[in-house]
Each structure stands twice: as C-alpha cells, then as structure tokens.
Image (cartoon, rainbow, N blue to C red; front, side):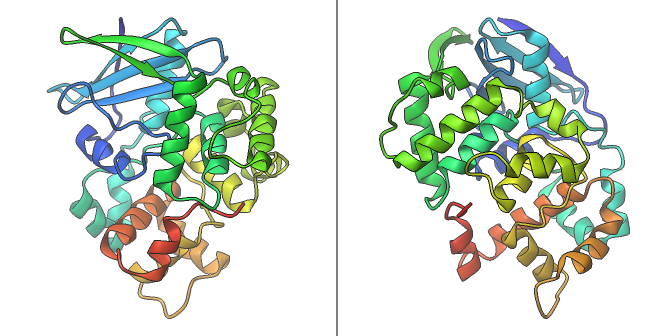
Length: 312
C-alpha cells in the first residue's frame, strides 16, 4: 500500500461527495472499506495496470488516499483527485451562491457539493455507450460483470481485512472480448472502437481537457457511439471540465427551468445568460441543479425518462 495526501482548495466534504456518488454509481466509486471513506477501483491511464484507492477525510480537512496495486502513483493520485473535482480550486465556489441566490439555497441544502466524475474519459465514454437505452442499474450490472470477467484483480488489505476488487477492463482487455453477455453486438463494436481510441490517445483525459471546448466536443463526436449528449457528458463528467455547460442534457435544462421558474425550457442563449454568474463553475452549478431536481421531483415523467440510458 502507498499513500498520498490532497489538500482541498476551498470547501470540500467527502461525505457529501459519497452521498452524491451513491446516486450515480455506474462507474463512479461510492463503496467504502471503512465508514466515512470512498473506495475507487479503476484502470489507470497509460493502461498498464489498475488501482484501488480508498480516500478518507482527516480532521484538518485534508484527503488521505491509500493506493493499492502497481500502477504509477502520480497518475493514480491525479485520477482520484479529478474524480472528486479536487483538481480545481474551489475557493470561489461559495461566491456563485452569492451571485445566484438559487444556487446559494441549494448549496446550503446539499452542502459544499463538487461533482463526482468518472475516473477517465475512457471509462466515461464506455459507461455511457453501455448505458444507451438501458437503466443505470442495468449499466452498473454490465460493468460489474465486465470487471469480473476481464478486468484486473487488485488485492486490498485495510484494517486487517483482505479483499480482492476487479477494475473495469483496460482498453486492451476490452478489445480481447469478442462478445459481452447482455450487450448487443452493435454496442460491442462501439466499445471496441472506444478501446482503440483510448490506446491511440484520442481519449486521453488531460489532452481533451486542454483543447478548446468546441474542438474537444467535435473530436468526441467522431468516436463510435458518441453523439451530442454523450460528447458533452464525457467532457464534463469524464474530463471534469468545471466551466462547461452540458447543453445537450435535457434533464439539466429541465432543472434550470424548474428552479428559475421559467414557463418553458430555456434555449441555449437563455441558459448561457442564466449561467453567466456561475463562472468559472458552470458545470458544478449545473450538476447541483440537476441533482437537486432529480431528488425533489422523483415522480415526474422527465425524471423517469432520465433514469434510462441516453439514445446516443
């Protein structure tokens, strides 16, 4: 076991992140080996190995990470930090709630929430493609089966207890599968295309983050199985771009309409104008509204539709 420490910049509460992750479990870690911790299992970019990481928050607010496996520790730490949005300076996040009282009320209600993201653009893209036209629960079951069938096994010993966890398959492991139980052949072909893109560097998370947003979205839309909604989701929730607006996401648009008491869904221009006070955390604010709307409107048709996988 190796350890690392992350000092959050700005307010951060791991319990809030864990609660959020528990509602979006298809590829985002919320299981814990000990109370109050989050356990993450993921293939490490560079694709030579996988890792299990347990993170817990210390009394001084710092995040202690315990890493298991042989993967490069710097890359493991970077992916763990990015998945909790701890790679961003959140000092100005409370100020968004001052500029927009609607966001401010939700910040008070739900705590200092930062979005919990996928561990890489590769895992986000494959998760969303698996999840097309099926529910989140079905997506999670498929991913768990894939991990057991083809992913790396990583041994973990915490507090005297030894366990083995399986990560989602690395790209080369995914390519080696000729069929995936419960997954249509057309999806398997798309997943193979995404695996090849990852090995070729087209899904390198930091590279995509460094591109202008329009260029990154265009590159993602060129990949198999990636449409407008999925491209936006990979960029925001796979790459953790904090100031992007997921304009292709109808549920987020509905959340903006609901909380801002608009008569109709806002168009792109109206949404962008509403979101101007959220800079440089427009994705964070959107995720907060999205999450709050899901929790507060559980019986609405749009909510039930949002629980199904996306069509693109």
